[in-house]
Length: 305
Image 1: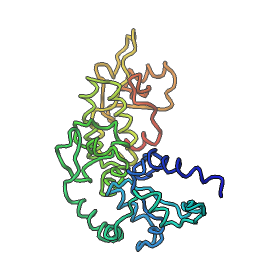
Image 2: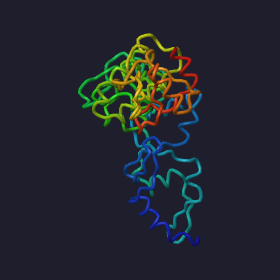
Image 3: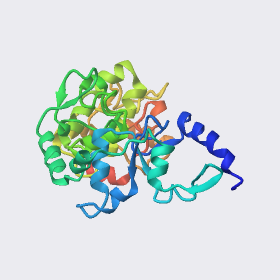
Image 4: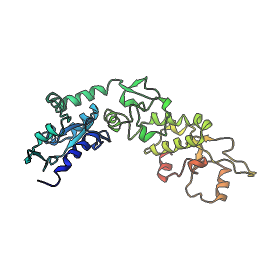
């Protein structure tokens, strides 16, 4: 008799009642009853040549899946009439884990229909089907929305450019929307310009928020700036120093356009800045918390000319 046989009863109780099963797809721990289990063998016969198609299907279906490793049944035994009986995987599943749900055959067939899944995703790309911020009432095309994780500082929920927050809290859902066309890496110039045009109204209410938005906009600039953005007043201006008696070109302005400002990375001393500020308005590159847009790279200065 094996010394660990007496642990079988508490083990089954533990398996049944505690959140011991981790679903990587949903990023959470679950009880046995909450979980769907997929045999690892299902991954070894993919019509696509790998298992990525199954991951995509599970993301869309939002199933609480736990993957069973191939060796998870080894050495499990049960005592019948004082004899030790070797339990195989089927016996263990039926006896110990009767609540485990394995995909029905017809669902497996649906999941392996990779071409049908791709066709379905392609159709969804052309249909306004994603609820958007602020309240989820309006539906938009995935390609009309932007990733709130990457570009959260550039717009407000009321601008209706983010997926509805309750809908997009789950990472697999966000990933699927990205796959269907949501902007997640690069924004077109019309979206960047639209964000820049909001700075004037935002800075009146919340200067810190406005400067975070300016900083986010500048991060998006990786090619030559179009004329419309060059003429948009969205960049912060260095204010006139206290007790400075000479004319100050930025005086009376909180924001100016790139064409109206200058920024020279070599201008490091206060004296030089005072002389320059009497001739040209200067871009405020102080930290966001001090009314500026943060440091500017030489590459940006080149692109915005």
